[in-house]
Each structure stands twice: as C-alpha cells, then as structure tokens.
Image 1 (cartoon, rainbow, N blue to C red):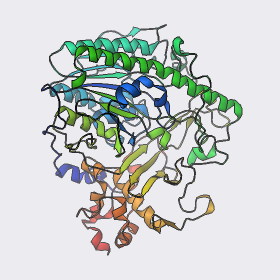
Image 2 (cartoon, rainbow, N blue to C red; image 1 turned 45 degrees about the vertical axis):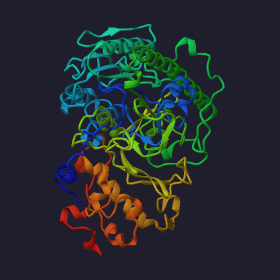
Image 3 (cartoon, helix red, strand yellow; image 1 turned 45 degrees about the horizontal axis):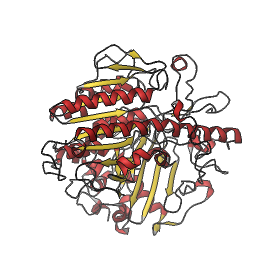
Amino acid sequence: MKLSSVVAVAGLLAATEAAPSSQHVLLERSSSKPPNFLFILTDDQDLQLNSPAYTPKILNRIKEKGVDFTNHFVTTALCCPSRVSLWTGKQAHNTNVTDVSPPWGGYPKFVAQGFNEDWFPVWMQNAGYDTYYTGKMMNAHSVDTYNSPFIKGFNGSDFLLDPYTYSYYNSTYQRNHDEPKSYAGQYTTDVITEKGLGFLNDALEGDRPFFLTVAPIAPHSNIDPAVSMSDGPTIMEAPISAPRHEHLFKDVKVPRTANFNPANRTGVSWVNNLALQNQTVVDYEDHFYRQRLRALQSVDEMVDRLIDRLEESGEIDNTYIIYSADNGFHIGQHRMPPGKATGYEEDIRVPFFIRGPGIPEGKSIDSVTTHIDLAPTFFELAGIPLRKDFDGTPMAIAHKSASIKHEHVAVEFWGTAVLEGIYARLGPDGATHAPNNSYKSARILGHGYNLYYAVWCTGEHELYDLSTDPYQINNIYPFHNGTKAQKFLGRPLPTVLNRLDALVLVLQSCQGNTCIEPWHVLHPDGSVKSLRDALSPKYDRFYLEQPKVEYEECLDGHIISNEGPQVGYQYRHGLSWEAWT
C-alpha cells in the first residue's frame, strides 16, 4: 500500500514542536569570548579494527584530555552522504544526497539541493565566527566543478579536488577563489598539515572566534588519477604512507575476530554470496591494514603540531578540539573485501573524541550519538540557538545540555557497495561494485538490549543480538537458514519484530524531532519512549496492524514511491494505539 505526501506527514511533529533552547551557558569557560573549534575529520577511519590505538599523540592530546564517546555512529556509511548529513544536521533521506557522484550525490547534487546557500559554515559566519577549511570536502568537487559555484561559507579554504583527491602523491588543491594547483610529488597529508597551520595562524590573528576544519584523506585507499579518469574500473589500492613511516607495524594483522573471513557464510544479499578468502587474499588484507595504520601516522603528527600551535597562542583553553571520521571501514569481515557501505559495526562506528573548556579529562560516555548530532552539538557549545530543522540533538557533553537521550540510530543506504583492493571482484565479469545494497535499518542500544535490525531492498531481513553476538554472525530473523526462533527479549520474536519494523518505518522518513523521538510518532501520548516500553503486551495488536517496511525494487537512489509505506496507520486515520485495544 502506497502513501502520498509521506514526508510532510512524517514531519508533522517537527513542524509543530519548537526546537529546544541553547541560550543558556552549557559549560563554564575561563574566557568571555565565544569558544573556538578545531575539527579534525579523517576519511574512512575504523574504530572496530582498533586503528586509534596506533595514533598515540591523538589519544594523548585529545582523547585523554577530554571525553571519548564510545557509541558514536554514522547514519550512512559512505563519505559524501555522511559529510553532507554532518554539515546540515539532516539524515540522508532529507538531504537526498545519497551517493558520491551525480545524479544521486556529490558536490553538484549538494548545490542542486540548495545547501551551498544554507549550511553549517554559513550559519557559523552569521553567528559571528570566522570559518576555515582545508582538505577533502566532498566527492565530485573537482577541477571541473569547483567554481560552479564556489563553495560558500568560508573566510579561507584550500580544498582537495577530484580526480586527484585520493592520490597520496599527486594531489590538487584549490585555495579560496584561485585556480587549482597541483602538488604532484608531495605527500598530501604533509601538504594539509602546512595548510592547516597556516589557517590556524590566520584564525588566531583575527578578532572573532573561529571554526577550523582540517580533513586529510588518510587512511582512505589510494586512487591513481590516471586510472580514475580512464574508461576501465577504478582500482582502489592500499593507502600510501610517508617514507618515514614505511617501516612501522611489520607484524600487525587485521584483528582475527569471529567475523573475519568466517568459515560459514554470513549476512544477506551480496554479502551472503561471497566466497571464503584464500591465504593470498588474507595476506593482502593484512598488508592493506598495515598501510592504513602507516598512513595515519602523518595525521597523528599533524594533530600534534596543530595542538602545539594552539598552546603557544594561549587559546588552547578556549578551544574545543574534536577528532572523528566520516565513516568506518571493514577489511575481511563477513568475507568482504576492504570497503564500507554496510550497516555492520565496522562501517557505522567511528571514533569521536572531544576536549575543550569545561570538558572533564579522561572520561568515556556510552550514550548513543551520531553524526546527525554534531551540528546541534557545535551550535550548543558556541551558544547558538538550535535550528528547528535539525534531525539530531546535542550530545550530552555536560549536564546543562539540551540533549534528548535516544537509544536508536537510523542507518540507511542506497545503491551499490564499492569493493576496494586489488582482489575486489565479484563474479565472472570482475565487477568492483556490489549491487542491491539498499537497506533501511536501526541500531538500538538500550536497557537490556543491543540490536541491529535491517530490511533490504531484496526483501531480506537481518536481526542481530549484539549482546551475545557482537560480530553479527548469527542472523536470528525468523526462518533464516530454515529455523524459527521462539522467544526474544522475553516476548515471542514476531511481536518484537513488529516493534522493530514500526520503528524503522518511522525513521525512514523522519524529520526534525521525529528523528530524535520516533516512539512519540507511534504513541503521541508519550507513554512509550523506548523499545522496552513498546514491548508491553498491551500494544501487541497495535503493532501487528502496522504496515511493514518494504521496497518495490532495488534502485540506486532515494525515490520515496519505491520505498513502501512511510508512517504507521495512526497518522493516516488520526488514531492512537488505544483504537486497537
């Protein structure tokens, strides 16, 4: 059954509820001047494979000096959609930037959606900040598109440009409104380090607070520009380190977790069809992993130098320093070649460390947070009123925060999964893209449960209990592998699945507050605030009657008419759950 005007309906609460205020002082600061921000954003950096453990300066100077958010997730495990969501505070289904290149994504789609006029750096400038950026912004921001139009919102910028973005020794940058400049022969992270230090000096000389983003490509795969511009498939090879780091980590291997090249098939769709990797492939993946760690060493040095400069300036005590990545990464898990784009833990969990004025040192916070929450968090830390159209909520860095606690992450994807590395091939045609990788899902961490539930465009489903199956090997969805589970979370499994499907149904078209408080969509009286509340037997009939998440077919982009019902019955009929009791 299809609905029209589904997005407007799903956003009803967002349009009628006011955004929480952030006019109050969130944290006590030693300066009356608004705080500065230094944001380091890496590319494709894993958390689950333990790469942060190999960056001691970042750990010592950011994580150990501040707070580590241990349950921080991205909502789309692909760089361009994730970055656009980060800088707009909106889920990818609301930006409709869902891929790395046109027609579904990339810089041209970002511009076409109107975001160049209305996004984070513009908002920060309007709030009295100087803004600076160097490194990778987003895909398809290229030598052909960089001035169509120029990116707005920065006092100073020096962007990496495609098709040279991912070449460690043949990069091209474009400063302010200047012509692109080649840095062939120079190591790209060292180039970014000098540019970042230059912008930091510019920012420190100004009278206004600043927000500086430094975005190196490490540890992303290396792509030869000549190959990427050819008609053949783009080969994404192992990253390249600076010569001074080539000797490191000779004996390090990809963590041999239970889901690394498992003996039995796991997952669904294309993942379930992957063959067991032979020793040659496994050895290559270990090499690939070591190269990622080596490439991160220059980032570690870069962070050290930036913080040294802040300390020399005297502004360190009035500056928030944030470290994170645009998405995670897998290498060999579930037999997958290197890459991202799945909803598994390796791809959606990323490091998130923050230090700054009023933030305690050496603290870990296990609250669920996402990249959708970053723009609201930065607003709150800067004392800027929150926007009503944010799909996220500030992260609970201090007790005075306007943060709304949530236990869910809306994870979504459209199109294909890119396979990386020299052995990344599917089938006899040697395809480097895995089809049918569209899915809607929810990652849920609450009292007494730790779940991942996904509905794929193929009609397949996944349900993992990560409290007993942390590596997502045993899909317990009914009838998977010919068996049917009986009870789950103390209830018959089908009744739990009805709740999970209803949650994903709301999240797949949520807007504003409906993304933060999806249970309020299903129970407007406020009686249900969590999955635990929703599991009450008195709601069984209500959830049984809800429409299910479904797709017409597997498509490469976000087309609402292809994605089945978007909200529960009660929005169509104006009824609450009591009507079903």
